[in-house]
Amino acid sequence: MTARDYAYWISTGLLSLMMAGSAYMYFTSPDIAASFENLGFPAYFRIELGIAKLLGVVALLAPVPHFLKEWAYFGFIVSFVSAFIAHTAVGDPVMARMMPLVALTILAVSYMTYRNRRSAEAPVS
Image: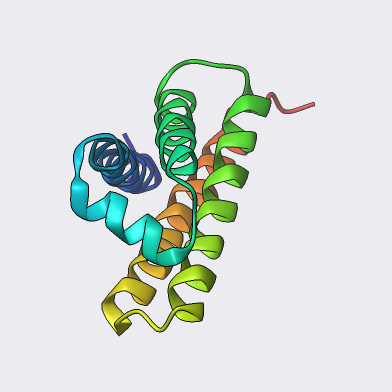
């Protein structure tokens, strides 16, 4: 394995753990439910987002068609940017605003190394 492979698996694994953990919290934590209410979102949105995060984790880790992985990356980008905007709009503490940006950075590393690995696997014509 190359350094690129290690960077890919570490960033993708960390991102997947973060998303699976947050999805679990979306389903079980009263504090997270209260946070969603504070942000002005309906309760069902928290469940939808949790399910979407779990599906995104599966798409990143499972051997699925490449277009599904691309859509999972895109979905996480939308989620992280939206989370940053929502937390900023309601005046949440700096840590709540910065966590989506940290996740976005990890996502960027995962995506860039994914694309590099994919281009390295492509047959040379």
